[in-house]
Length: 533
Image 1 (tube, rainbow, N blue to C red):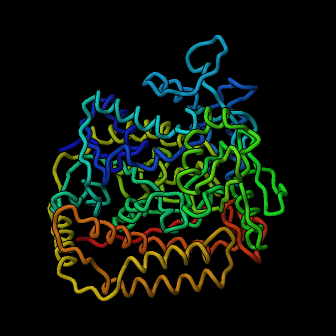
Image 2: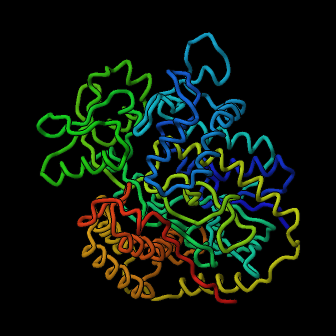
Image 3: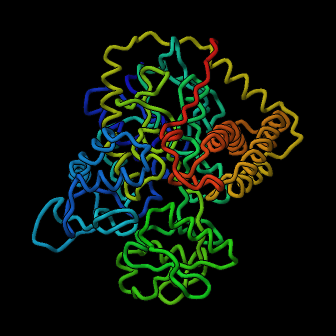
């Protein structure tokens, strides 16, 4: 029986794996894709740490900026822990070999790490590796896991958690390559499965697979979720492809212009304010552009080579001489699996959650740019340690196979099901519905209309299924399971947005444009009662 089962092989999962292994645990990392394909690789801008390498900065300033961005919905003790751990986290990442961009300042170690400013920050705090920061961190973590002989099961799709007496006992998975349903028993589990921004299918910077699989599985298993209404919209995605253009482009001096060539917002305001300002311009029939021309080709290629390549590939423009057409799209889910101070899931003992799938109360109503990579590494280590501590005293008696039988029967039924509705069309419709009705600016009538349409989709789900009946490598099956999870989480997000009659951070509601601390300075928590198998 495995000591620590880690579900998700992005930066959070890999960090937790290294931490648990170092503590002495037997560790298995299971992912539905390969580690290098995770969402972590898309984090371009940087990882926050108050090093003070480029101008004065302090941990207290980092804490203050994070709390301010969260609009009163963070846990200051958790924020303090994350920010205080940041310098040590950079030191640890550097010791593993992360190739940060460097300053030629005659110093050594983390004191040479280059830093730039991101929106909402009071100092140049984001440590970066050109505009490939997440990718470089991810590859370094993966290389280190391989050196440490950590075991991986790739291409295994999470179906459900296995619990007994509100304690986790493992999980069931679909082996994508063979089509077989498997049970993996474990003394403790770390959920590191990523966020749910792909509810906004076609209008998100996230990969198609960011459908909240781990969040949905936790909810089904009796765990709590919280703050599901808080989804951050990134101000600058490419207009036609929704590919992210990093905030570091504005941090290095990029301008936002409308069709009339006017700068209409301070580019380094928090993301929610910048996104709403752009949305307002678009509503007024203006186009919006990111202008990097004044930075020059040499500087762009030195600090933002990926952004230049993305613009050329997806928009067929050269940002050194042309304006970049952009729009705001869904980017990051602040809500997710509700956890306590040890990152243990509310309602499921021995199950921990970290990264974007987890609501550790550090982002609140609006995440500060540069804090996501910090959270997955600083808290990833913490989650791995705590999961190992739980495993020491956990029972080694494996669970029965009831969940395995249920999930096997469900997969078999999908292969036999007559398909009357195309779920791909429904997935497109859900993405458009969320962007138009549960988007940057919200209104109760539209939210209620969206909820009704989602419930109708749920009712018709048994009429949807898979056309591909091959057992092996069936991507059609995986995408249907992902859509089913998205459809499960959609009403939790909408319902929380309806209930929050105020505007706070990323949640902005017409008719309720002010923060209402008396009624809403609190977390929206949802938990289902788990029925015995």
